[in-house]
Image 1 (cartoon, rainbow, N blue to C red):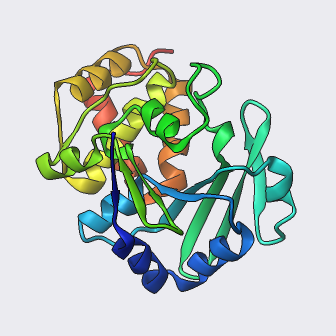
Image 2 (image 1 turned 90 degrees about the vertical axis):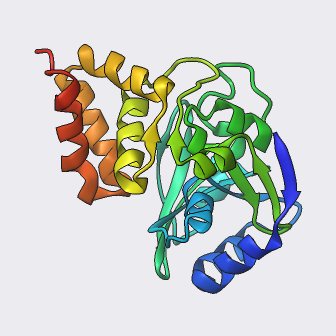
Image 3 (image 1 turned 120 degrees about the horizontal axis):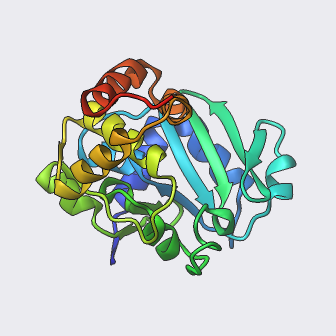
Length: 227
């Protein structure tokens, strides 16, 4: 894990998405820590503008999210909710840090380091404290530099979803799949079911609806769905 101070990313978010920035700062005041995770930071280093902003907030509960009128709260297993909202020119997806899927199941610490450790894909392993500009990198910057996607879960879970996300990111970024990512895609697709395909299509549609068809076409290159 590498930790550094990169306030210019916070400034970029503030300038690019001012309404979303102020929404987060105003609704989650100190000492709560607001972490921007995954895609938008990767997009910053790739010189892209994202269409959504994934946010996890320390020291909040589902009740805190439900109290914010702008958020549509949806179930978030096992017993939490996440808040979705279109704020200005970007969509926000917000959830309580301690409810991040996989932390409780695998005994990981309820910290941003724990959140990044449970991320299965190298290009997801990055987070920024929006208020302080502290950047946490657990392999994402190496993936960006090498333009590759690797698969290394702390514990295997959501296998089909991760295969779909690998193909989705490949379509979005043009990155190559390293042997670990390619092996996982082949393993999942060799025994994929129609419910798996539906679940993958829903996962891709949430972020990049234009990529649903290309991802499904890639899946069919590796295997036919089982009845």
